[in-house]
Length: 226
Image (cartoon, rainbow, N blue to C red; front, side):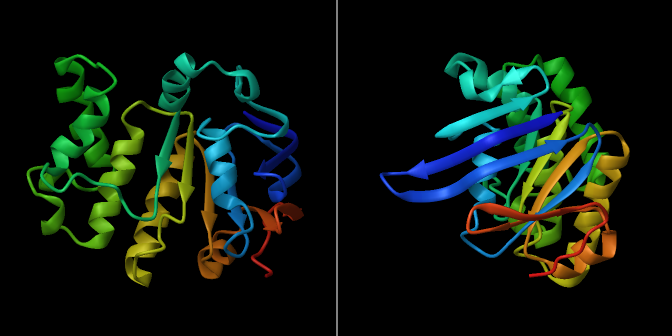
């Protein structure tokens, strides 16, 4: 599903964000990416959605060779990869329904499909009854659920979550992780970057640890050891 070979990312002349990464992630796998701030987690996420290009090495996602992908093909790639961020990135003047629908509208989807898909994904995250509310009327956890619903509209094969619980309290953190776990059980590959030691050690999934842009451990059912 995801295969990185010898991936290095250098900014400018000598700022090495990632160095010689080799990772293979299987379909429907759940992988935690952990490490301190500045270790390259966000850079890796950007490489996977072709927001950045590697300086060296190759990245393949399914049939896509990200290293050689054309800019015109990037939107099609991103429909296969759902992104969840720490700061939700919701549009404040749009309702829950409109925020999720917008992701389909910009992709040129037909109105009939939008009307069908949006309630489905909102039901998955438990917000079917709140689709007419605005972001300011929701809790932080509910806003993140909207963001997760938005990431699901294209039925992606992969979800990349970059610190999705970073702005949430412990109760909402547990709820969001349970939703992501459920999405994984549907067959979606999950790559989740986090600082949260408790959720990593509780779920006991595969853990890839970065330090100074390099992989220092890769363990099945691992722990956050930093």
